[in-house]
Length: 320
Length: 320
Image (cartoon, rainbow over all chains, first blue to last red; front, side):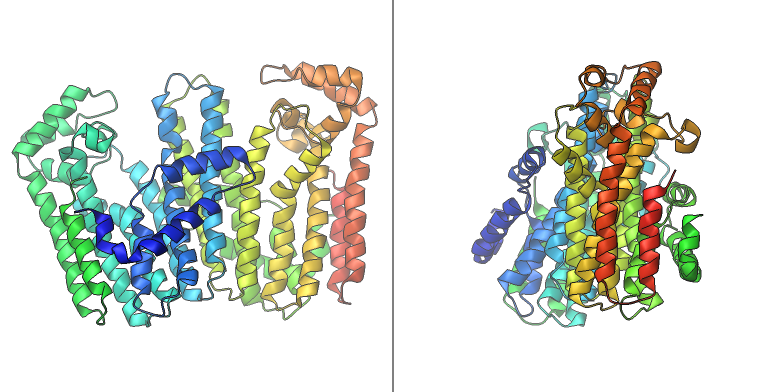
């Protein structure tokens, strides 16, 4: 079962959005265009545009109007990915800070800014003040989340609450906003658009927890990077937080830093897999999904409800 | 004569904006707040808010509404300053790329993103689609300008047109947008708000050219950095472009790179000052100012017209 099969009835609309995304980042500046196109062609699940469209199905669905919102939300997601990479890139070249690396970083930063500004152009036509408020609040939360993520690196005394707040800001809020703004752009009643926000929030939390589990359980081939990379880079996620409760695992995990070897990380992962931390992490993800599903139950009757359910279930089971 | 004396009748409104700016960057995240407050307290001329207010005086001036626009425009300016510094900072520490430096850079980048997102929150209440369009187009141009500035570094074969397009994107457009969006937020008729945009554009061009002249002619104490820093960093500005037309100066200027010594830069500056390149640069700045002044003449009668004229004249004469 592939994710795309769950919303095949949206295929032609998603193709339109894909084309518009390409147009959006065609710039007069060749280096900007190349950098952005590279990112676009790298693909992605286009989860945010899909939620925009699905939410709009609860109102006066007009693809021309909702298309712009979908493009804007995906561009914001792309811009945040570009900024995520800015300094990571430099770290890879640590010890060799070539002028080229610094040049690249600056260009990467402005490429992110540019993609973000293009997103705003797509949003500019939306008359609803509420849509602009939701979006700008979301942006603020995203930035605070990013900064907290940097500050929380290698901080092994953080709480579950710290983690949940961080993934809320980092992931869940943008998915929630995609649902809500998609709904607003289709004149969905406020109470329904707010329910859709809650649905998106819960799905987003489950999505990020699943991502964080996969970072430990998937193979290097599936991830495109070594398993355990999050922990290695000091990003303390849910499975690691649960593992820290165990005396023995704790001892090893709190010693992790940038100089830890791959075999040390592998050993920690093996220990974690033998314990119940992966299972417990799945259980928390499932709790968010159950909440998402019960919100769907309360939504007005609509054939899109089934798709929302299918996607929520899919996210809980996905293996990559 | 100080700039602030030219608009003393706006003092209480500008004080309000100053307070709102402080509130705007008060974040729950202490490191974010500190970084932003530092920037705010460093001051600045608040030129963009002033133009927002002055332009709004041509319509239904409502300080509560126009205040949000003024705060937004200043925040966008501040965010762009933060991003400007991101990699410069790293360059200063070249050869010693401490983790701290990279950490700082990432935080600085997200601080810029955060301030920018806060700006959008202040704009969200503005109902006019046109205002959102002008602002988002401005953001796109700003980013393209920044990227071109990086690409044009140490490129001594660039044309006057390259330079003018760059300063238009880098400086003039945001000042022009401040005038236009200020006007739009006060329901100024479209033809007048577009004239105000043109006024802002021409003032902005003159302002940046003057800045670029001062980089050569002011003292280190006035500038807070060595004279000729632009050239040293490879930023080819108007006086340098004119100097490149002279065989002898050309020879020296095209040899400038990051390893050039201060005394070599000082020698080039001395040579430039003996030539007519500063005078010619002033002349071009004056042409933009004349155009700005003639646009003011065409504006509807209003006691603000005198202030617009005074500010334009002041910018042409400013010594710091």
